[in-house]
Amino acid sequence: MSRKEARSQKPEARIGTRQEQKRVVRSPIPILASGFWLLASSCILAQEHVGQYSQVDVETGFNLYNANCITCHGANGDSIPGVNLRSGQFRRASTDSDLNRILQTGIPGTAMPPGRFNTAELAGLVAYIRAMRDFDTRPSRGDAGRGQAIFEGKGGCTRCHRVNGKGSRLAPDLTDIGAVRSPDALERSLLDPTSGMLPVNRSVRAVTRDGKVITGRRLNEDTYTVQLIDPTERLVSLSKSDLREYTVVKTSPMPSYKNELSSGELDDVVAYLRTLKGSK
Ligand code: HEC
Ligand code: HEC
Image 1 (tube, rainbow, N blue to C red):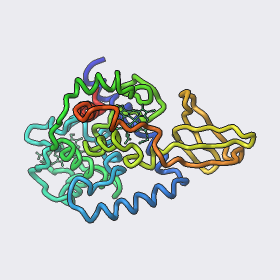
Image 2 (cartoon, rainbow, N blue to C red):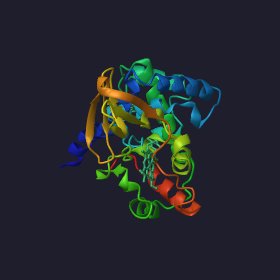
Image 3 (cartoon, rainbow, N blue to C red):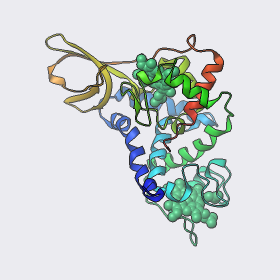
């Protein structure tokens, strides 16, 4: 496959990774989840740094960037000479509203095209461009190579997680996690998985009329059915009318690594996760 073909195929592949989660966000059921986001974003508005962009926006922006911008600006945002999107310094913009304008009108007289994005999409793109910088400014304390060895070895992460097609589907695919989560969020996921858990990652517990208990990671849900991946990695589709009980579990099934790994090892794992940006 030529490099160009590889490029043109990448965006779809990457969008796929997170799409399952997005579908869950849009489904009508987690009213709780959207309540959470309202709450979270109103708290976040008060502060003026990394946390000001919501995780949902960053992920939306990441997908749009991969589909619309990466061909010119590159995965790292620095493919165009003189333009470095992840530096946080722009020649033609300083505020978010400047960025918004550029994304809509393009830059006349240059290759930068105008885009037709709705408000949520614009917010996502700006959040992602800003996040690119924020995620990079904290230097890595650990060693990514050692982190990968822990991830695949003694950490046992691949028992549940998948990276670049390797590992289990029980837990979220982490192939692009470094592009959509800040280093702090990654660290929190390892130390205290439940507090770091996003509503979209909650698993569900269902009890059928005949008393069978089914648990798993929710992939999709609508008014009548729910699809999940059970602990044996089987895709299960349940009809809600057949269920006696249906609950969304708010504690993470992921073990905390606080006492399992030394702080140096945790730094190594975080360093490795930060390199996972979907661009392999
Ligand atoms: C066809 C190629 C192309 C595509 C697609 C493209 N850009 Fe650009 N972009 C450019 C070029 C070239 C420039 C530099 C224009 C100049 O100032 O000379 C630029 C400039 C920018 C700037 C201003 C940088 C600065 O330093 O002021 C931003 C922000 C930007 N692009 C974001 C995006 C985003 C986000 C997308 C996707 C929605 C995107 N671009 C899609 C070619 C592209
Ligand atoms: C027993 C299964 C299991 C193991 C082992 C496990 N995880 Fe997880 N992990 C999960 C589940 C389920 C979630 C989703 C719920 C949550 O966010 O806590 C998750 C979430 C995460 C997240 C957050 C994902 C997101 O979208 O924000 C990260 C990062 C993560 N795990 C990294 C790791 C690393 C690194 C290891 C190994 C050191 C590991 N996990 C081991 C089950 C596991």
